[in-house]
Structures are given as structure tokens and as C-alpha cells.
Image (cartoon, rainbow, N blue to C red; front, side):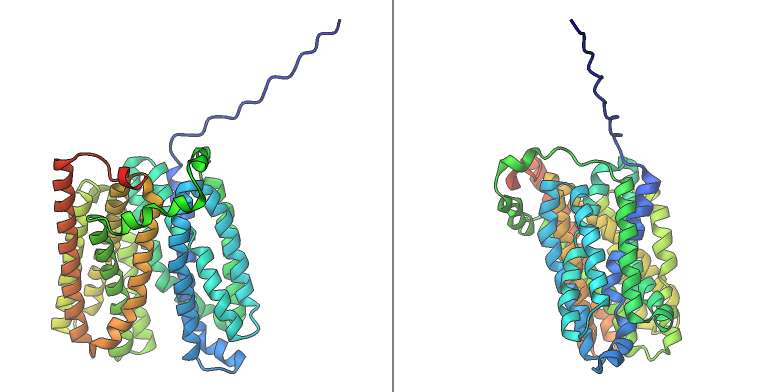
Length: 411
């Protein structure tokens, strides 16, 4: 009789309770710059692309719009899917797909092909913001979440400057196709970095709960929720103001290219500084923070309209600081109110940002001048602060009447 001894099964080491802070924040911040920057990277490349294809630079501005449309649609598609299938699973599909579509843009033989590929690229890169922000809100140590969220939202804002500057400096060296090829390589590195730092997703226990379409059932309830809808509207106004300010400076400022570059860069120190201040600011209630930052933004814009360009650099730095602090505060307030539908709620938050970014240039163009634009945007920021105040009062009254989480009606 032979005694057979089977080897002991290998046990996987247990996953840590929280994700590593420094590595996660670094990987997600750099990826956020690359993702959001794809919206802006085309702008300094327009003349080179037009020269290569024999078309007009003005006509190629649709390459920016096509990406923005795909970007906004992608948020709504993939936010609910990240709730259903997991943040890590979705990003491990989205980032390689972003690399592929970005490389295909570099190979575009004509503007028409590039237009379609830019829309597909926008959809692909849209997997990152809702899934990534939801992951930070769930898997980081609670006391460090606000810092990481502030850093990543700051990176989304900083990308508007950083990617345009990079494209402006590199286009004469590697050409516009090389710039997209470099971005594609960046997405490959981003996929490897994000894969290395993310914790495994929970088991797919919810797959049996319903069809794929059931993942989208929370959308109407979140969009028309009496608390969240006000915060989404405030987010649209906040982002529209941010883009409109810089568009207005471009149209009405009368500055040289070097001066415009300096004005754009004036906000970068604020974008870097605000995440460092968040450990102290996190002690303040998130909605209170959002209201204060929106009020500061309104005040800065009103002073710009009153004084003109006398202290424009300092006022822009203050304004960008307010926006950089206000965005993560809005993100937190929406995430906290959404309960288990966090990924879907943050997809709507990202869509609100995309809508604001698309509306901002039209607001600037319709204003007729820098001074009326600044006064109008200051009024918009003040209204956004009022919306957040009303939403806070509504949430408090609802909790007093029926204290249960918002996730229950949108399961």
C-alpha cells in the first residue's frame, strides 16, 4: 500500500486593508495628467497638422471637440461598469485601449480619419477618471483620501498647461505624429504603473443580481437627486468658469504668446500647493470647504474685472487655488452622498466637468470683453456657492426626517 502525500495548497497572502498612499497617488496623478491632457495637446499642434494635410487650422479644432464628446460619453458608459465589475478590472482594459487608440491617431492618413479616432480615443481614456476617483475614495486610508483626491483633481487642471507646453516644445523635434506616439507610450507605462499599485477588486458577486443594463439604473436617480443635482450644476459652473477665464485671456487679453504662457503658468504653484494644505483643510466639512472656495473664486474674478490686469498674475493664482480646492471638495461631497453608486455618481461628476469645459469657450466668446466676462463668471461662482449651500441644507433636513443612506433608492 502506497501512501500518497498531496502538496499543501499555496495560500495567497491576504490583501492589505488599504492601498499604499505614496505609490498610488504618484501613479494616479501622473496618469491623470496624461489622460486629461489629451484634450488640450492638439491645440499647439494644429498648424503642423494642417500643414501636413493641406487643411486649415481652424477646421481642425473639431479634433478637440470630437475628443471632448467621446470623453463625456465615456464617463457615462464606464462609471456604472466600474461599480459592477470593479475599478481595477476596468482600468486594466481602459489604459491599454487608450494606448492603442492614441497610437492610431498618430497614424491617421487624413483629418476625417483622425476625427473619428479622436472620438474613440476620448471614449477610451474616459475609463480612468470615474473608476480612478472612486478607487481613491474607497481603498486609501480615510485620513489621506482628501489629499490624494486633491492631487489628482489638481493634475486634471494642471494638464491644460503642462501638455500644451510639452507639445509646443516638442513638436519641432518629433512632429505632431511623434507627439501622439509619445502619448501612446505614456499610456503603456501608466497601465503598468497603475496595475502595480492597485489592490485586487472584490469578487464579482453582483453579476447575478441582474442584466448588464441594470448597472445603469442608478443614473436617473442620481442625476435628478435633489441634493446631487445641485452639486452637479455647481460643478458645471465651476469648470465652465475655469476654462472661460483662460479663453477670455486668449481672446481679449491682448497679450503676447510669451505673456499668455506666463499667465497660464501662474496657476501651477497653486495647483501644487493646495494638495499639501488638504490635511489641514480636511478638518473642515467638505461642503463648507466647497462654499468657501467658490466664494473666494467669485471674489477673485470680481476684483480682476474691477482692476483689469494690474495684479492679474496674483489674482489668477488665487483663483486657481480656489478652483483646485473646490473641485476635490465637490468630488468628496458627491461621493459621500452617493453611497454604493459611487462610481456612477463620479461618472456624472466627470461628465459635469466635461460639459463645463465645453461650455466655457462659448461663454467667453459671447461675453464681448474681459471685464463683463469676469463679472459674469464671478456671479456664476457665487450662484454655485448658493447651490452647494442649498444642497447641504436639503441633505440635512432629509437626514433629520428619514436618516438612511441615499444608496437605498438607487440599488
